[in-house]
Image 1 (cartoon, rainbow, N blue to C red):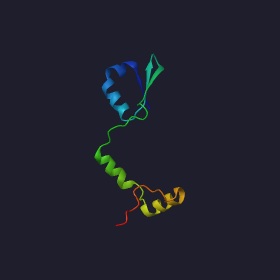
Image 2 (image 1 turned 90 degrees about the horizontal axis):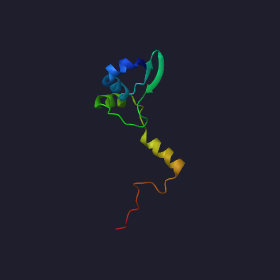
Image 3 (image 1 turned 135 degrees about the vertical axis):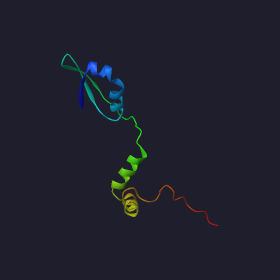
Image 4 (image 1 turned 30 degrees about the horizontal axis):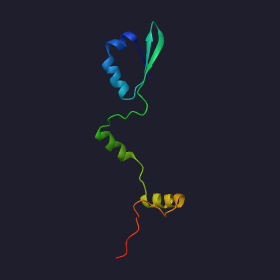
Length: 90
């Protein structure tokens, strides 16, 4: 969280809003008292560069898909699994 004056907000509104869009929260002061908070809208998606996604993927934990399938089957059952349509005789 950053704190800036009303005057700073007026002078640097584009930069402040760019920061807010990237996830930063600002408290705005007037005459030394906090009067407002500017924060990103919740649930709003933001652009994530490909490089950041690649970096995140490199540090993500490995997933054992066979184990995950077995756990899901144990919890939900395997009778109505999506993608396992009955095969026609022929």
